[in-house]
Image 1 (spheres, rainbow, N blue to C red):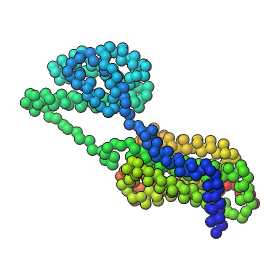
Image 2 (cartoon, rainbow, N blue to C red):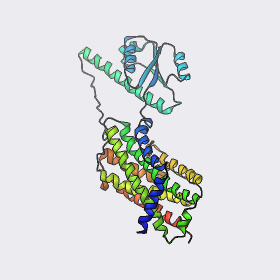
Image 3 (spheres, helix red, strand yellow):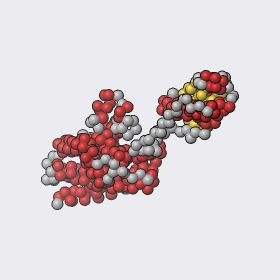
Image 4 (cartoon, rainbow, N blue to C red):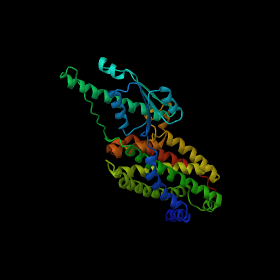
Amino acid sequence: MMLKYLIQKEFKQIFRNSFLPKMIFGFPLMAILVFPWAANQEITNINVAIVDKDHSSYSERLANKIAASDYFNLITISNVHEAALNKVEEGKADVILELPADFEKSLVAQGSADIMLSANAVNIMKGGLGANYMGGIIQDFANEVRGEWIQSSGKNTLPLINIVPQNRFNPFLDYKVFMVPALVVMLLTMLCGFLPALNIVSEKEVGTIEQMNVTPVKKSLFILSKLIPYWIIGLIVLSLCLGLAALVYGLIPVGNLITVYFFAMIYIFVVSGLGLIISNYSSTMQQAMFLMFFFMIVLILISGLFTPIASMPDWAQKFTLFNPLRYFIEVMRMVYLKGSNILHLGNQLIALLSFAVFFNVWAIISYRKSN
């Protein structure tokens, strides 16, 4: 019965603050509707300068093929390499493609021709992907020319191998399908980690927590009364995010929604417990916010949200084993993209349960209650 009144007190305290309800519902709207478009690693609008010294039919065909791509903007066609370099220096070109004067002649006579591809690697992501995209287009152009020669000669002595890629789980390589489930994890982390920490610290600053400290309420009951309201709020926010993902992006999990909610219930206790630990060691709101930002930024960066864990150095990959965000992001992506169930997610379940027990026991022990 006492827990019931403590939870009622928490909800009244949350909704008495005019800012918190707006943040609870406004932040998910902004994150789901805006972040997937901004946090997109698909590179488009790559500016390419073509230095065409050949001015032949083949060089013109290649230029037109590049211009027709959705990835490239053909900004200039020049026969002076220095002019193209100036465009790179001015930030107006990302990739330079130089076709030599004997491009068509070498292609016809020898069956091959050398070209030079230069990428501006100041922005290594844009430069690297731009060069890869360009290489794919050039390879496709070479296959077209080769096919025309075989057809015109009437001979089929050179075998052609057609490679048809088939992408499993995300066949159209839509980056939003990959990012939205992970962004939901980030939202729950920010809301259910930040708010409990700030709630307790604000009570410390106002002095109302001293009234609780002189009551016979047990530490475990007090911590539980702080966790349950944000557990409920987290599930409401999760439902809102899943609904927006379905309505706006048509993103529906391949697996069972019950699996998502089951792991979410555990994960909310994990991050809420972490937030309560930080609040127990913080005396002011400013101190709590700095600590939360420090931990959240580190945990988000090494969670696999933006950078694949397999691409990290060995020491960073080992460090991610102690990051609860990693496991819930894996759960969300595997349920959404692969249709995994609880039986397939045993390692993630054990890890999240361990984090939940560890953080919440620590929160109870570290809470200093004076009678």
